[in-house]
Amino acid sequence: MKDHVYAFEKMQVWADARMYVSRIYKITDIFPKSEIYGISSQIQRAAVSVVSNIAEGMCRKTPKDQVRFIEIAYGSLIETYCQLIIALDLIYITEEQFQVLKKDIAKISNMLNALSNTISKRI
Image (cartoon, rainbow, N blue to C red; front, side):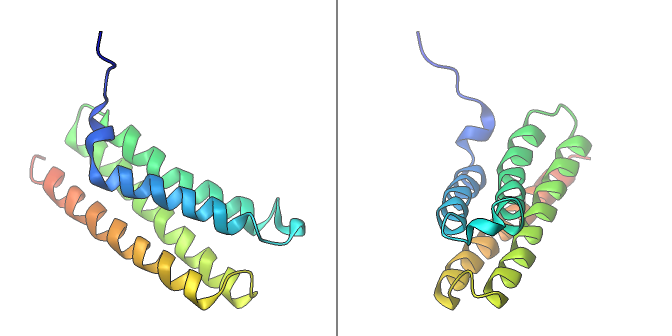
């Protein structure tokens, strides 16, 4: 018997967003312990929201609902970008770490926009 694979698991944008979450967790793990319920937690939750909303959106039946969840994922991605800028300002991350994550954000952002445009054509 084969294991069931959901459609979102086959998507490159979901795989990239999943790896992004892993990078976020590894980087925020070194934030000051005083931030465990602050910016560290906020960045983690926003990053998890990206990958979760991609998955949830792809299981929706209507293109309109799918696009709505992709837009939420995009919003969460931009939220993590803003928070990473703050983390850089606070010297919680290095410029090098920030640039790596910024490239991830740009790639995922482009993929989400393309996905949204493709789905929107079916509305």
